[in-house]
Length: 600
Image 1 (tube, rainbow, N blue to C red):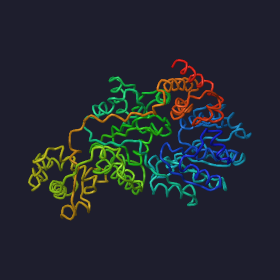
Image 2 (cartoon, one colour):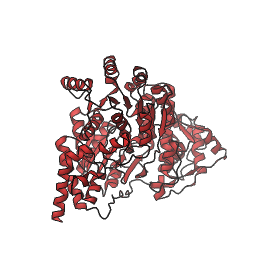
Image 3 (cartoon, rainbow, N blue to C red):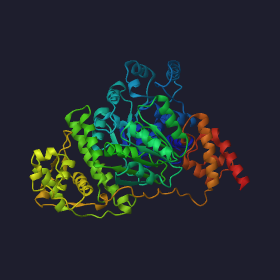
Image 4 (cartoon, rainbow, N blue to C red):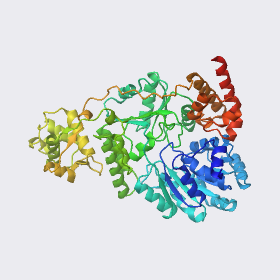
């Protein structure tokens, strides 16, 4: 058995690498740099943990969040790996004691935040100690074009000169082509191999519906999910708190999470979510990075995310165990306008703002997709696929109808008013509703005034959204919300192309969402034993103050319930059982299996 496979089996309890993992391991073991882009749940951490243990010496892992570092260190320690983290949540004495173990060669993997690593003192100390490998988690944070850019990550480009000859592995789940180019240039000066796995997460069902009454739509979605863990994303702190209170009032176990809460409140909410089942976190984007809970069954977006990159990253927190999960979003035109204002209010140059507006356009197009939603999402990341059969459009194929004549009325209204007014103004004109401003400008005398009385307001609003999503209209990037006509829109005005729209996007929202797919187990997996094993896992996790999956994944427990090991030799053959976990947990779980057999 090769050294890498020996580590994989003895430490982590796996017989084989997942697709893509071994190639990345081999690149790092050959002392070459690599950028690995793999979907959430594909096992990115193992790609640098295995070569770190094979190479020996000290490996340094850069991670953006204390919670993420603590969870990974806890999991490694349970697997028998000498791993530590030095971070701001620990006292000075504890951090000094950990550093002494690092300096004396007792630590194999050290987790650090970028701002702690990139100090002259830490760099000098690590140079004296010797570093065999550097791994950078959530590597998209280094890119100005990434969905979660962090200025502290920018300093990491100095690592290649501070540690010449030391291989650097950068991993992320979210990086389009522009972001990947930026990462490779900054971190590696262009000298790195790239591994880009498929972005598809086929177990996640994708649904988007027009926003009507968010709370009612959320309740409809949650019907039939009384014990599922999930995340509800909202745009503001206030919204996250209101949604958590609303769900609590309706019998759900829900907690808010946002940057305005105290560290203790955030920690309590995260610990509850990670260790208990049936908890719903109503959160801003402050919650999520580093959350590695495998049994999140749904992600519900109550507001439009910032981009398709952010959306992909956020829905990726669902279904990490490979079982069916749901991503459900409600959105409206107001969401788009608010996101535009956020982009224009950000610090950054004009090029960054232009790119972010373009990314938002892609998100709107995804939301209004007339064909397979997964095809639309994957095409953004440069992948092609057939219809998925697991999105709302595939399950209930969207009817498209010719909307050319009505679309041209909207385009003419924009053109005749100077292409500087927003959707509300244009729809009012088409409906024949003139406010004082419109009257003073003479808009009530235009040929398009009242030309749209044949359709109600919600139809015109949806048509505007779909014209924006289809690239016929452009919302003013200066942030004033004015709508202008794109070259594609001019072609439509001149009847050089057609416009087909989705009438289903116009229907009143709030329809009952289909129930989430139930997790199916093999017939030979005793449900009673599985629940017993999960209960024991929860107790062990609480005793150690770690997430339940750190003890054993659901996949391991299902394997355990199915095979019902009778001794240590049988237990060692289970998926995800390495030598350390065999020693720590075999007797406890074997006892549960024995008691189940006796009671059967």
